[in-house]
Image (cartoon, rainbow, N blue to C red; front, top):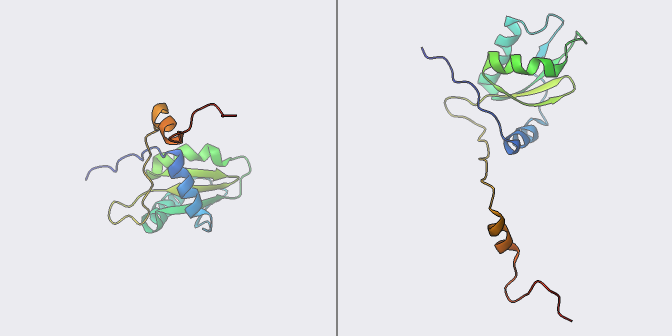
Length: 130
């Protein structure tokens, strides 16, 4: 059996898209006083298989910040954290088979000359006529 591939980095556009999709969601996994245990990681993994996009709430220990857990969650669940709001993580991992969420592709930035050609109006000059 081959190990699952590591998650790819999400672009800003993809993170924004996932944040919008996650807005109405309720947290499905809670990290309690014991922290990030194997049972919690298993619950996150199971929820990602089912839902692809989940919210994880951190309760209990105030010393553990959500941002401190991001890298550990990403690494151990092979997922991407799209957002951290206070003590809530938005976690995404695409399904291997039949993904429901299709991320927007990163657009190539248009060159400056292409941008200038789009804004130019035919028959008009740059100076205002009096």
